[in-house]
Image (cartoon, rainbow, N blue to C red; front, side, top):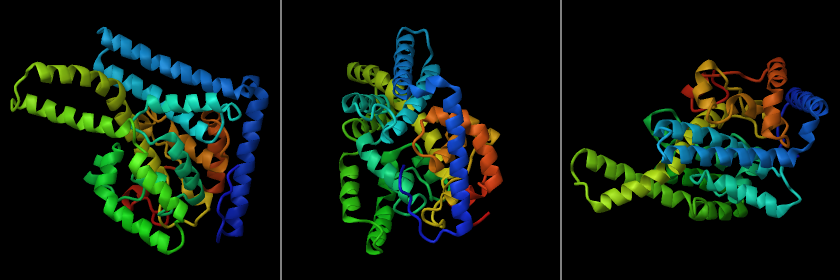
Length: 351
């Protein structure tokens, strides 16, 4: 288990946290006792990985031979990638083949390769553990990176799916925030070094080249549509190659990332919560209007709060325990569908 930071958390909240955690763990233990196949956790994870990759490859083949439309291709791959994201998250927590490093790393590389716009998972591991330690604080680099704490408007909408644009448009302000946190003693030299490595290498070798290709693809498509560039051998060759990469690797992941980042950045609170107080870190975001987003982030808004209380359980077990978890959350005062947080930059205090 992770060691959560506890500062000035009230006795009442501490008791609630322990009570929620105990009840969730009890439910997970009950499910493991009832469904014996759950003990094969490593192979369930590997099996889900193989099924998801197979689904992506089959969909790509059907599109390539003209059986599947481009829209269906993008939606289908985005769904399979949502499972790969959950597998990556579990792998970061060491839930599959932890003692078989070679296979563990092969799985980690595979989920990254098919979601190539994402941060290097070995680097993300550092910031994800940091997220658990400092959720909702300015130094929560993982959530700040996906727009948590930003005021809603056109800019946040634009950068929700795109990590590169999100960095470019916010780098000066985020740099000032981190500098102040370092002065305050909340951001260590190790954190600073890791942040520099993240900026320089986190989206290589896949993310940066694919983003550049995507921007060039959009530009050329626009110029061709407006008849500002004439069609020729080179434009045809570029578009033929680029279309395959864009439709299989880029657009599905932009869709998936938008859905995931929209849900996660709005279900996490930011800025005015007690550090280490898990009761204040997240809400359950599962209203009917969120379901188009949930479809491409594997019901993240409904289940992720469970993870903040019981960290080392695989994502499919959270899906199985969600009904009981929500009962417990409601009893203990965890918020559900707090849409006011959308209006006040994800602050916890204003309702």
